Length: 267
Image (cartoon, rainbow, N blue to C red; front, side):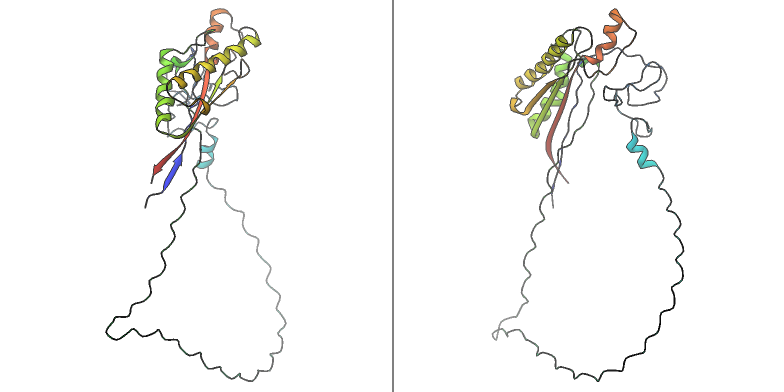
């Protein structure tokens, strides 16, 4: 028997590019972006920034608390306190036996009606069982961080060819075959310039992604956009100026995309 299992995926797509420093040896945090002081790069929400596929054999405690909790040995229960011995109960006098009751005769057995002579008698078939109701579909989110080829340039809101190819693979192709696809786009900017201008720039970046997805056939009513300006940075780049500051803040010039859909899976 086949039932339907439904899952949903969401692509959190960061569109911009950042020059980050990396160490030459194996990363102590496989699957996460690491700074030049061997620290995990954090997002504006204090989440670890993903930069590849995590090594399943290595647990990064500060980024994967749920895996640490699963691998921790269960705590031993405290020894149970010994209960005091029960006090002897008073023995009540046994009641006088009641006179035996007269046994009631058993009810007469009901025999099945006899079939006509020359025919075989068969037992009645039980009613068919009702089929189990299929499980209700659930929508879940999957976060995906793209590489530096998908970020926006300084003071730019146009999608690069590399960014369009990423959108085709992560969003467009899935939306054409998925059930009830939903897309949420959030535009961001760096902190260089006036706050009002940066808010407008982040809106233009979100609009650029929405326009491209609609051109590829996605339903505009299923697309939601938002703009954050410079209020949700991934890096701060304190103490840097000029071209060095522009390069360092490149990771903040992005549009994040959450893609979710209901996809039935046979099991």
